[in-house]
View 1 (cartoon, helix red, strand yellow):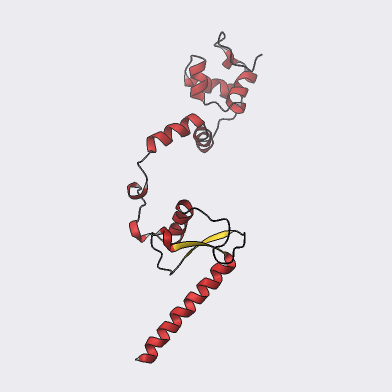
View 2 (cartoon, rainbow, N blue to C red):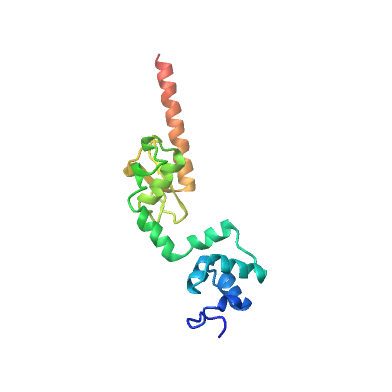
Length: 170
């Protein structure tokens, strides 16, 4: 079949259908095709141009390259242990923001199936017990949205009442 890679024929790139399948359908790079056909990149490029096969943009080529399992594995192996916690260039230490802390809790604290307050089986949210947002997983719990809202309102009211008591005592 003309579409398959032919090991015996190194001039497949001169066939428009074959070259189209390799470059467009199989998403091979110019470099890959040239290597398989034992020719130069510029030769493959010239034949693509001759057959009016549209070249990929750099961003399209990058997306294809990154989605290849062998490249993903290579990148993953190279990055192991290099960009975790304190080693990550965007690490803020204890100064992480609200969103970052909640993302960290979702990643590190096992999610419950039911709300820890009412027992409903709904989409759960990470709720901090006293709103000081520390990096202590025991300070967080899983609540449904309605319990989370009620808890936050009650905590806010309690803090306001405490402030009023202090003002009234003075």
